Length: 458
Image 1 (cartoon, helix red, strand yellow):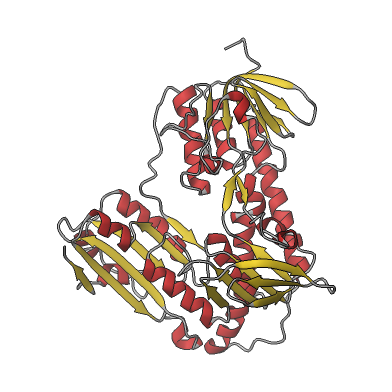
Image 2 (spheres, one colour; image 1 turned 45 degrees about the vertical axis):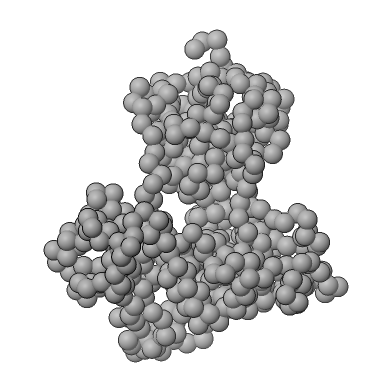
């Protein structure tokens, strides 16, 4: 390997790239990594972590209200957006420092620059023009927010990138989209007292999740005062003289706001990366095509994370990066199983899910037992809040194997993590039934639902 500057060069300092670099280095590889913005990637810098901090902040408005039902007298309260931004920035800076130190501790050489491919073994650092050779190159540049570039006035909208750094909290906002990011930011803005509208082109928000959960989350959002417009999209964005914006829709609506935020998906960050020079194949949306072991069509080039558009979640990118490093440098080949991934949407109310939706399960077997329970969380018996929790279990009626478990309500994401373990182990309905309940908890519903609410037979 001495003919190259590095055994491995990683383009992209996000979670997947950093994990791959560190593990490869512990296996004895000489590793370099380049990042054009800040180490930690989208998740740490302007994604999962700051978003979750914003979610926490936005929930206090309801917590103050709920406290009165438990005997507390809550006095005058106010919210300071700039203090939240400063606290968030301080935490992100701390986390980036940890990422950098972890690279240093494993002797990975970090380059603060955008890097592009020159060929199958060469990258160029744009900040200096320096060319670097490596036996293997790993592309882990992630994805970036998508906007409709053909939309008149699109230059007047913001994305999640800008939402984390707004100079002031808007009084009125419109969020375009119906996925994770759109739904989560709608809840954040609403919780912080912003007049919030969500507009989505589809029949129901949160496409890809179980239908019952999708409708439940949307209905609960509407109870909280979020206006949800479905089956409509923008036709143009108008900027007014006072700085406000108006989103004109195809259905004839004129939605006025201080900010219009687009969260209509993300696209692989592969533009002008030099992949064509190296001969790396991409699909129609610019995602890098890879095999199960993250190898591209070019033997020396691999790719992990959102840039491959497989399962665009930070923990998945980390696993893919680890698997790559173990396989190529550790003589411990393994691949990531993308078939069963627990996940959470930090909507309000929160959603946690693992396994198949009812719609997906029906495609595999016509014989299903559906267990479903909707109830008021215990906390709200005293708070008086009109909010329901939903738990749903999908069971193969023939084998009694649990195919999917889906939860809407407080701490649903925490539940999904543990439920992911049970489904990974192949749990059956009988396994849940013979588990003693923890009382009083919401989770005990999962082991006390005895009779199916619906029996589907083909």
